[in-house]
Image: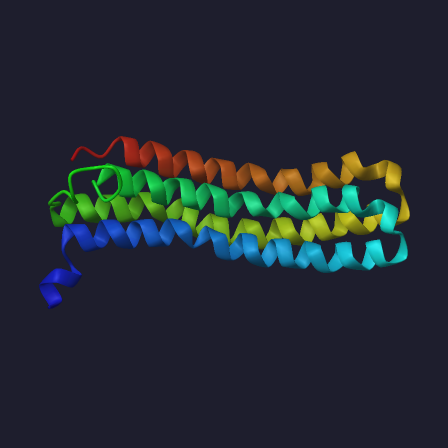
Length: 161
């Protein structure tokens, strides 16, 4: 039992699950921004389109995590293959390590981006012409999610199976 928990296959699948944890940050971030958006729209329903755009921004971290999880599952043969490959513990641990950057950064950047987007939404509520500035504030946080995606992707591509 303990041996199967520390098999290469288990560690690789744990990596896919870890990458998908980025969705937690997106869910929280989109929720935070949604609360602010609801407040603005309750005052002026015509601002729905502008605030919806800002609310959607924190959702990208979850997409990045899902992308890395899918790449892992394809790489190990779980999706679209002839069955899962037999992996050494070192290979599984390498795949797990490659998933950690997007998993962790996705959680925290999704939450931070939700807060920045909520502030941008409040800006749009007071000054609708400032949508671009509100988007820029939220997009600055996105930079770090993109960097984590790049690190995870490059690490995965360097693993030989």
